[in-house]
Image (cartoon, rainbow, N blue to C red; front, side):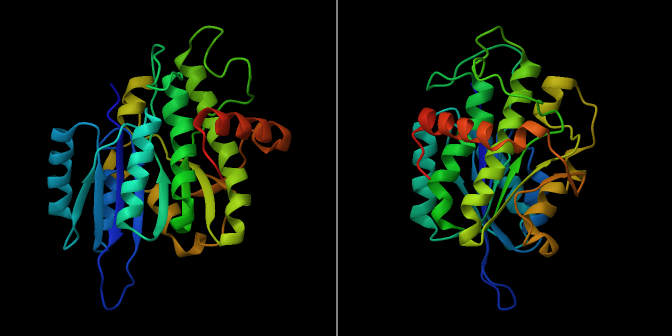
Length: 280
């Protein structure tokens, strides 16, 4: 079972700062701690979500102690379920008229093939379809930025006859495919959101010892508390106007050529829309 962690973060009202709201979608419960703590140090309010209520309570308690005057609220959701994602989005919209920033950080690396509640290969469901659907449901209340987490491990091409690993399962191939799809989604979404003034970018978050990294490659990266690239892309004023870009270690980088092919991106978008029922 996948314990999919989603955090919506909102600032408290202060005389010298306007209220700000963030959503951070994170599958591994602790992976976004660095983002959360840095954001909370600016006196912002945290809304946490986790599939496991007990774990959620533990994380919320820990975050509350670091929030420095912020508040913690919690949601339950499974990002492997379209129904749960829709319910989560409705709960967010019921409580917030606007969200400043959405960070689609949730991701999994699966060593063996399994299916989501909706019948899709799990890596594809969590890494690709979940952010596509959730963003579609929240796009009308997002006012500033959308950040999608991709990877330097993204694939170089898409085999549309193997999106569900029909030709034999490979955890590496499934993950690489999902991260290339994330880049393609980012670039098309950037064009779509440009008239609203909302920027959309993606990044490699760095080699960080998250649950996902350890599952796929072992503990070969930096400590979670030292990770800051997502925070930078979500908050740095110098990046406020940048959109449709891919970042590695805090700098713009070139994503694989396939991600810049309009015809391939159009085909992928159509498939994601059909699979999720999402409407943009």
